[in-house]
Image (cartoon, rainbow, N blue to C red; front, side, top):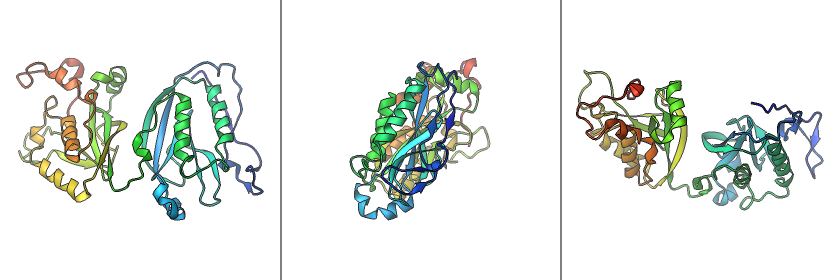
Length: 334
């Protein structure tokens, strides 16, 4: 990258505005040493949002405000650092802080969302963060109208990337959020390159996350496998071992209870067997669509499965042969 950065923390001990207590400089916004003339040139900087479940200590400390609190803490990653804003429970002081991406010490990491790319020059990003730090402080914090979610929303807007998804603002915990986990099919650089260049006809794998489990469907190369052997299995969200995780898509919230979801999976096991798997006409995306329908949420976007009908041709199932360019893309073996 043409732009070279040198982050340097403020030396010595610093003091918060309006406070007489000395604090560890490691918890403060870093001092930026700009040593470049080319930092004013536009770049293409990826931006991510890291979603955390609100820490247990925070929920306990502010239990009288649970009804107005979001259950999530949000951090925005740009230029290799994650930035967030919130009220500390140890000192009851609100401030902008930074940490390694996905490593906030006070909250439980849940997932990462890709927000797109920012063309704001690196120098302007540094000025932007410095300006936000002076305006988002202990005196401007409000649990309802000016909290960590509003800070993340403001930063994403300034960076020119996507808005935060609506579900992070939902306070109703009686409904379970459902996510579609999207992977690059297999674990080869060829697939990643193809998906990056042609997303509409990419080669992907998907699974549906609900109540902490990611449900997916696959076939097997074992010719001796019983005909009624289930093709449905679950993995830890975002951890399918056969593919490389790409992104999470929010599909909506379901009112079904965990035992009802388990019952649905048991019912679907009868129809979604290993031997019924077909890469082109009955694959993991078809299962994801069917499960989302049963959960009462949105269907997966068409682009995750647009490659299959193209390769299947007008007479899917009648002596088709996949093109040589995708011959190595085998179904998920579980």
